[in-house]
Length: 458
Image (cartoon, rainbow, N blue to C red; front, side, top):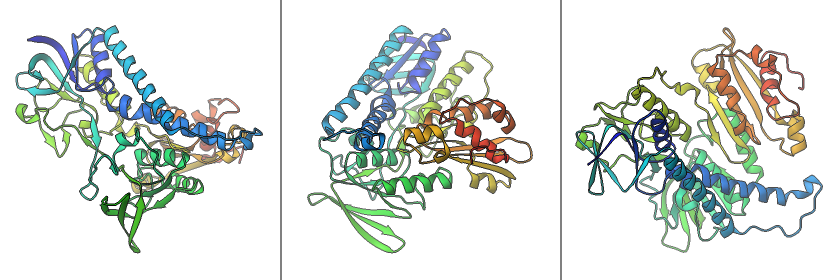
């Protein structure tokens, strides 16, 4: 039986990052993977979707070339080629992880891993043991009882990335990050898209003003939006799909070629041996302490299978913290209140910390500043004036409570707010940090200035 210091079950952005950090710390490490290195994120999630979205963005530029003083005639898209490019990007990233495993002398064990007692893992009949076993099995598309996925007419995000034929009409159920990203992509490619959202606003975890702005932008681009609406049944017996939607006004039947179910994710905790070992779970989450230890010594869990935010960067941070704690280093528990969230539709969305509603619900006296990109020189020059940056500060102590952005490229700007909050910076310190001109990131400084009554360009 092969013996390791650490075995990681799963090789997504939680698992492979954990394994690399463990190897750096001197642990003999192995990763167990049943499919492709990089997990869902690199192969079927974060990375290939961004490739699809980039193709959509470039196509949008071509369609609006005249806005930039350019003439482009006969701009067309090749749906198959767009999908093929996305798969090529994903394959390249997965090969990159393969290289990193080799570089860091990490053994890759291919197969389905099942946990055993005594700190052992069975992989397709072969047993391996380790001093520490870290579960990082990720998650998959969640299915609703009223919306069973058949992979053809009712699909999840995985099938949405590799459709053989572009649908003329699509219904997207759910308006979280996955839902709105695919809605934007298919709409840009010419598909007629309708979003059905159960709650009273799209991107429901975001600040209310961000949700309203995205709804305006989407409607302007031709996407139909139904909020406070629920798909109660689907009929796939005909050529396409008929979805019965319950709204406040009554029932409505929508017809489409395909329904994309984007109603969240479900953790991959079935059949991996949790019951064999006695590891405690709550619904579909593995219970862990601040350092990702389960109730059974020697077994740990990180990423989407635990109660924290189901985000790739969270899983990576958790895995690093977990193995550094195992190595005896002094580590601080992760601050889940300072985790950035990013959505890559157009306009993009990025946020961290409290929304305005959350801050007021906590009874905080707040200062709020907002700077629209319509007043930004860089945004005007780029032809991307939709959106804004909104900041929320505690009026009494100056704490940066939240930052919410919607606009072109904002996912690359949110790190300033994350770092500022981590370092407990104040609004006045942000104002005194000179921001380069002309940039989109100036809007952060301008929004902070607006909060303190010092804004220049409004």
